[in-house]
Structures are given as structure tokens and as C-alpha cells.
Image (tube, rainbow, N blue to C red; front, side, top):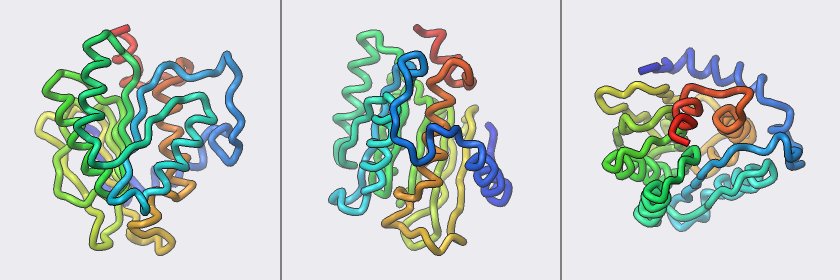
Length: 217
């Protein structure tokens, strides 16, 4: 398991943000047909009542502008999302799987990954914004990123024994511009996530997870 220590992780985050491809800046222009992403099944889960998870909606709109077809839903739809992914998998779907959540939605996407583990379904990328429970990330996840603050809600999480993927707890408590209610809206963090999705779904920058998934196609 590749674990990023807090200080190193923050330095790495800053460096990678500088390297985000131009198409993931403020431009909302869709890529050309030749640059369209490979199939990706992307789910974004909002938190309580959905009123404080506006970042899930804005991130979804940015993803749509880049040619993806994300699904935005509520944290309490976790079982429905898991059932849908499982059904798609049984039909032979090999799309890259990305799960993103905020607050209670973060808890939910980890729980979804756990349900998928029982079906031997890998999760290529799992991103959480301010997880609110002490949860364990299952080892069917290839890359895990947790943005959090020690603000009374957010916290670090742990990896299941035997976890072999990339695992990052990024403590952003020092950033006073962020809070539990807006951490998912931060443009820099959204750009970071979009870059990870870009790496996963475009053939000329294939990640280990993407290569592994393509072998099942």
C-alpha cells in the first residue's frame, strides 16, 4: 500500500495542482471527439439534505463538459447505487468506476465500495470530502483520496488490512478558507480530482488502475 504522510501529501497536492492539464482549468469546452474519455461510471453522492454539497453538482457539471456522464444522487441512495453497479457488472460492463462523496455522501461511497467488494468488483478511484465516521476503506479500491479538516466533522480514515492501492488522507485543517460546508466546492480540489479521472480514462496517460481495468474488456 502506498500511504502518503500528511506533510508530504499536502506538498504533493500543491505540486500536482500546478500540473493539472489546461482543459481542467476554468474552461468548460468539451474535448474533441478524438480526445473523448473512455467509458467511466461516475457517481457523486451529496450529504445531509443535499443543501451543503453543492460541490457535487458543480463538479458533475465540469465532468459533463469534458464528455463524461456522471450521476449525482443523495447519500441515502447508497444501496440503489450499489445495486446498479452490480447489475451493470453482471451484464459485462467494464467501465472505469469512480465514486465521490461529501460529508454523509463520503461515508456512503465507502460503504458502496464495501458492498462491491463482496461481488469482487474493483473501484478504480474513490474520493471523499470530509468523511464524518471512522470508516475502513476496503481493499478492492485502487486509489483512495480523502480531503478532510479536523473541524468537528471531518477525519482521517484507515485502510483495510491487505490494501494494495494508493491511499491518501489529506489534512487541510490549516486552510481557513475551507469548512465542512464548502470543502467540496474548492476549485483546486475539484481540479485535482478531475485530473485523477483524466489519468484514469485517457489512454495516453494510463494509470496502473486503468491498465488493470482494460484487461477485463
